[in-house]
View (tube, rainbow, N blue to C red):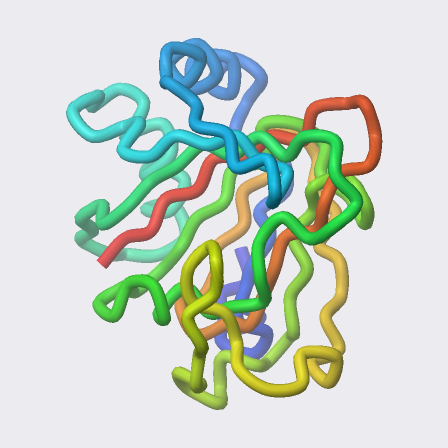
Length: 190
């Protein structure tokens, strides 16, 4: 793994980090979650899915330990399904605006995520600017000011890919106008 690109870009994509067996185990566990729908944002989600489930937590956190030598504690986790919508599912934001003591966010692709299918878009290197001003939006903090100037680029992910995200990285998640499910799991640690 290239930890230097994490320092430069503010994110690191670990391709095929989790096996099909590991993803199936995570999927099985997450299928029991009670999903809430935010129709106006085109998402269904559930939070606090892995707290108390050491096996699922270890499947995800072992991938982080393979890259970073860290002692971690989960601040927040959620499973998200991006359903048929043309608008952005999340506002442009930094995770540190939600969680001030976050040190890392981890996104596990549970399905293919692309340019237009529930994919993550990020502004490479934006984490170097530190925590920026956010306004309170309908779905939580969103970056203040002109959001078109960030030069967000898509992070194309396949099932089993893991993305490590710096808490100050400017990013968003696009909508999903397809009929195929776009699904991911994210964990924020301190």
